[in-house]
Length: 423
Image 1 (cartoon, helix red, strand yellow):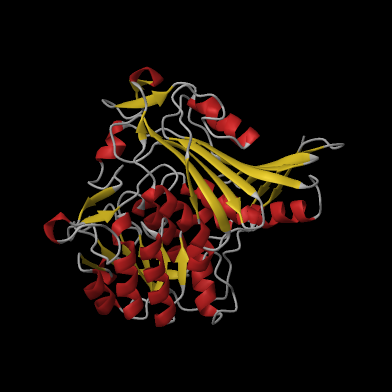
Image 2 (tube, helix red, strand yellow):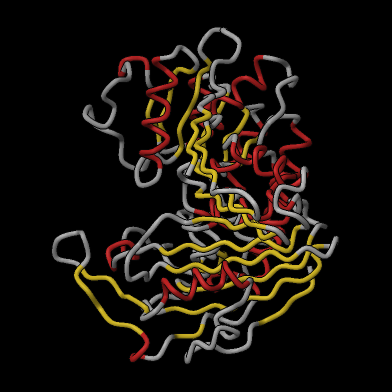
């Protein structure tokens, strides 16, 4: 097997004064953004000027930053006003994304908005309209779409390396323990009673007065393995809100949660392409998620977290390559520094099809609870906690990506025909 490394980082943009940045949500996944900011600050690209958290960060959490030059506040709007931030990173609970994005937009502050950008298509449209009206730049945090492997794969398909395209299938076999679903009130939920902590955007939920709810939609396909969905759609070229014709879902849960943890989605695009994603958070042996591009004379496998590509085709030996990646915050900084000449990699418009999938899952019947004999509890990596394992889940998601088939079509004893919706 030939293995080559193509490592262009794409982060060496024009040199300007460091851009002042505020981070909203610095714990949980926000720690990833905090670490990324450290690297970009050391490179002179950005300067962290504020952190929005209910409980201020301590000295250890802010190691590497100038704490004396940094403001902390639980009031996002006040923080933006006090710091004069030019960019805000929003990594807060899903139901708060739209409202916080609009707070920044009203102040002319550009955005890196964590995925999913909103919990419903209505909220996505409200966010996108507000961002467009304010004239700010907004990048959605699908980091895999910054991989240089994406253009490499598109070029291979365009040049006929694997023959006629036959479809795209993605597989994700991850594990999450019970503590994962206890980390926050919204974790593993489809909806929550509306409170100041969960967001109050119009059109997000149902009901009125004290009985009103907000959507969360924290399922395996919409949050932990959302990159599998977005990456598959981007490789197909079906990224806009009008690019999907039909969406069929199979939503299941082994854990005692509202949302889905083992699910399948099958998409037909307006051009007739077929895209499928099967994913679980109850894997027997967790592994790297991947996307398979099927062709009449071969296939391309993309491990998107590793930027690794394997090409297998008739008449050739397997060819593996590892690619660089453009950081999305660095890309946003370059976009601003060049007055828009450097295009954003993931503007809101590039996530419309993904949000159609989120909406289909939001309005689908609640996930089916798997029967007790379909799963078991095993010790988790975290001491003192357990996780649930769906028997055979790893093989099912792999077989799904290979055959572009759902759990029901694969003959899983617990599977039922899916729910279909027109986009």
